[in-house]
Image (cartoon, rainbow, N blue to C red; front, side, top):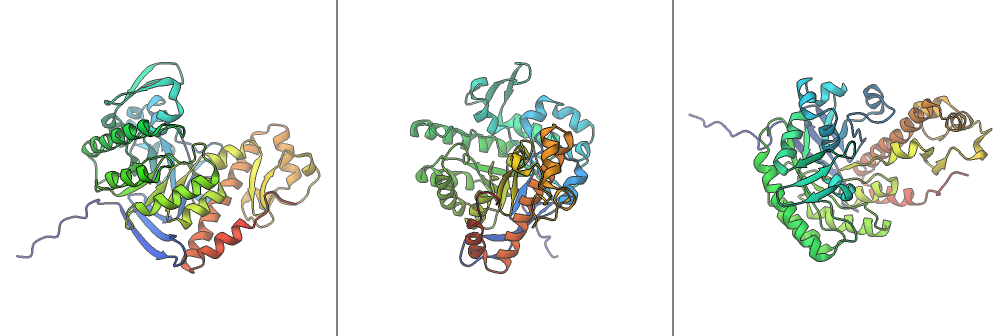
Length: 382
């Protein structure tokens, strides 16, 4: 009798490397998830509260977004994971058919430093909404994320502040590793959700290496780098990512959390990172700061009052195909809601197309050339 082959270790989730660039560490890959494939390297729009601000799920589909990020902490507060689960899970709740990733709430441990207290058991928060006392443990984090129903879950961690002492980092990393083991034990729906571990360590190469070894010793579908883009200089960010990314397993997706500036995406891809997320493109768009092929443009500037040109003549998004710079400035000056939508559409289109161009460059073996050409862009349009 032929013995049946055991099922794959993470049924429903698989990552394959399709091409590698010989001059850099860039990889072209594909994640297979229960809600469809995701081509990498990929930028994930952020929908913190199950909504990418100013955009609908139909917009995201037209933009080609294959995966979106939502936030555990915020959804736990409102409307609550029980309600989302009762209404069919996060995909149905937000009417988005693609893959979803939920951040664990670990960044809120960093950003809500004045409202939280960390212990071995977990983190006590005071809600930023009404001050209500909250508690989130590694086990609770897994329970909330599994109830929400995302395809990719993030392990609960602490993102230490940039100025943390080495002694604080040592203690924090050790606790995050212990929390990862607790998350792994509480990860009960492995056929439906993938769990990613998070490597911390600040800008210390020694601590990054040690923590990567500890985190990657736990067999998981993917791994992430946390604790970057928290105030360090651009050069330090790029150097830190270039060192840390290759520490993660080659055959698993590598995710750089919270990074979304165009130049940082290019540097991250060249270092071997596969996944990125950030609120930057939509947050900038809502202030009138727009990305273009000729650098960043502040559409509120008076110089655009009578400018009949499209926002970016090299862009084919709905905003650029349809409206002039003068009209966009008019919308922002008068605080029209349409301004937020058109700006967000453009900025996300810009980043998603940037990732598509890098995937093509990797396949052609010219990622190094692409990065050099990108670095020559002016800081702002003429």
